[in-house]
Structures are given as C-alpha cells and as structure tokens.
Length: 167
Length: 390
Image (spheres, rainbow over the protein chains, first blue to last red):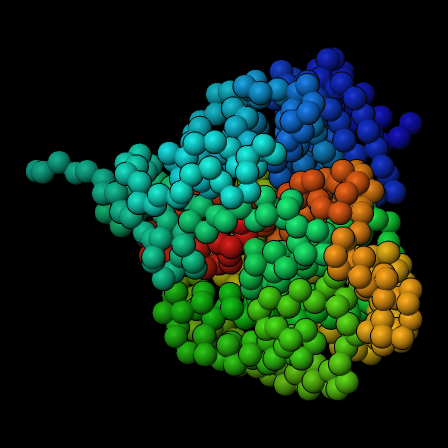
C-alpha cells in the first residue's frame, strides 16, 4: 500500500466522508486530496495531530479560479510534515458565495492566507477571526484575481481612504 | 492615583526600521508591547495577476521584482516549477551555474540583512562594510546578465547565456577575500556587549511555535529545526556539495544572527566546490521548442531563425497540469505553484513568499516584549515587503 493510501485510510478512520478524491504524480512529488468543504477542519486536525501523519506546518493556502466550472473556486492547502519530509496538497472546491470553514484554529498562519483568498477571490471563510481585506484597500469593490476581473481594474485607484479600524 | 491606560502607536509605513512599507499598530502599556497588528499591502501591484497575462518566459522578469534582494532565487524557483510541468532536464553545467548564482545571491541578500539589521539596532558602520562586498556581487551579476538587481538570468531550460570569459576568476577572487570580511563583521558584532544586550534572549520563537506559524528559513533553523530544502529536498544538484546546516537552540534574535553568519561561510564553501567541479558542456537544455537557439545559429540557419521567431513572438506551450516547486531562498521556503491550461501563458501562478509567513509570526514574537525590541525582531526576521505584497 502506498504512502498516500495509508494517509487517506488514517483520515477516513476519524473523518469518514472527508476525502472525496485522491490524485498523485509521485515522479513530480505531487499528492492531492480533494476534501469536502464541511470536513476540512476535522481532516486538517487529524493530519496535524495523528503521530503517523504529523503535518504540523501549513506551508501555504491559496485560491484558484475556474469560472467555467460548476464550483468555480479551488482553495488549496499546502501542508508539510517536517519530520517525515512530506508535502500534501488538500483541495476544497466551492462555488460562488459558498463559504469554507476557517483553519485558523488548527494552523494560526491560515489567518492571513484566508484573508488573502477572501481579498483576491471573494471566497468567504466561516468563523474567521479577522475577516478583512489584507492586500487591497479596505473599501475596494470586486475581487482582482478572479478570471473575469479585468487586468486594468474597474475604477481609478483612490488612495488616502478614511479607514479607522486599525487594530 | 490616576488611571492607567494603553497607548496605541502607529509605526510605519514610513518608519525606517520597517524595511519598506510595513505598517505596525502597537498597543503599548508603558514601554511594553501588549498587542501588535501588522498592516501589509502597500506594495501590492497584482504581480500574480500580471503573470497570468504574460508568456512563461516574460513572467520571469516579474519574479525578479518580488523579493528584489534575491532575484536569482526567485528566477530559479519559478523556472524549476515550469520545468517540472515541461519535464525538462538541465545539463550539469547549467545546474552548477544556477547553484553558483543562488549562493552568490544568498550572500548578497544576507549582507543587506546584516547591514540593515545592525543599523536598526544602532551599529551604523556595519552597513557600510556589508554594502562594500554586496557591490562586488552586484558587479558580478552585471557581468553575467547586464543587470544588477533584476538580472532575469535564470531562464526556463537553463540560463540566459553561459558565463562570460573571466567570470570564474572574479568569483575566485571574491571567495579569496570574503572569509576575512566575514571575520570583520563578526569583530564588530559577535562579542560586542551592546549587541549581545540587544539580541540575546530577545524575540524568542521556539521550534514548535515556528512550525505552527509556517516560519521557514533561518528563523526556523535558529530554533533548532534542521529544515533546509537544499538538504531535505535537493534541487539543482545540491546533494553533490558538502555543506553544514547551521542551527541555533533558543530561537532568539542572536541565534538568527549566528545562523545567518554561518550560512555566509557555508555559501562560500559551496561556491568553492562549484568552481572546483564546474563541468564543461552546454549550459542549456537542447530542447529547441523551449530554449532560444544561440545567436550565431540564428544568423546562419533557417531552422534556428524560425525557432527564435516563434519562441519570441508566441512563446512555448506548457502541458496542462499543476506543479509546485520550492527552493531554499535566503529568507526561507520560496515556492511557485503553477497551473497550466496547455497554453503559452500560465493559468495561475501562486507564489509562496517566505516573508509573508515569517512576518505573520511577528505578534507571536513581539507581544509582551519591549517596544525597542520590535525593531530588533523585525530586523532578525529579514522580511522583504516586495514579496509579501506582490
């Protein structure tokens, strides 16, 4: 049994419906698990806490937009086990307006990453402790990394906005 | 007795110690920091979006401008990810040149860190010494690529051109003098009592916390975690070179300083081995659909002229798929996740900037410390806002 199969088995033992699909390209070192949005927190907790999995680090979290698809957004979690020297990509698919539960309780650095995905793609994260924009100005309209957002933007940039909520 | 209350202090975005345009809002109780909130995005120019609208080879120039202190490493990480999608092998000479450039760039980046970090804490002269040596490396980059800060030298399929005549001697001369120069910087700082007072036991980031916050690079190794991608997932033939991974034990500002100082020496060691073993042969992959043909062939052969024309005007298609490739940049794990739809332009490029995650751990390090230490902690994290905001 391959390493990925064993990992999927361990996740399914605790969260039966979490893993929807497994994809591998071992020669490139790429392993993906598609996770159901509602199970992502439980699945990530198992990945982090199970001694045989030990994915203690969330290396990255980002979005991909496929507007032609039924559920257009991929939210990709790049988790790393430092001790096992292994990397896994978790993928959650959501449609327009559907939210993803926040991972910031499991991995503290998910906080800013999720803010960035919200800022640039408009994917809301449920129960996020600080759901503000992060890179764009706080009063920005639209989500620039969506494929249907024009490269030149939609309105002139107005700096010096009056935002008082700084903490 | 009057009531005590906390003070909210704005630091940046024009504060000199914030290394660019980082804005911190600090809540202070006397001189103790009770809460730190970082505001980023002042340098956001939508580089990931721009890359989606450029051909693969054009997007290399954008990677230069993310972490502008280690442009070569950015070029390399991006090219490795594209090459993974293309399944291209780089000949040994190309690999060795890439390692040489990465290590020179690591030294240059660490010199900027050391100079600015020491200046933040009040040691002005270190900065001048560091920039003296950094200038030598930037001159080398100008020699190989024509540009000092934004070389775009490492390309998909190899490098822009082979090393110019006399370049190896220039590097060898630099390696001859540089170890003494490291000793000069260390003479100014390593046993300097003011430096020790300002750095030892300050800004603690223990291993467990560093991993939880996704911190990589020298701040993680200063906490004692031997995680260096050059060793754990070697690329470009790093497994053929002997070098040590310096580690700290406490994870304070001083440990991060010592780790980076030792990394300077290890980079010199790697560079010496690269010069010694530098293989002959072509530097670039011989895939004519991806790599530009040499100019003399373009001027004499019809086929080469066509390849040149097609590559410059239309670019090269990359098979559909998703690939991630990461390298150990001077700041930590720098990764590119590229989604291709089979066309000549990337469908999506995601950069995993090490500084973004390292900076996010700042409140965990700085809260509860003194306000003066915030400056020391930011310096020791070695952030570049260009790659945080992109």
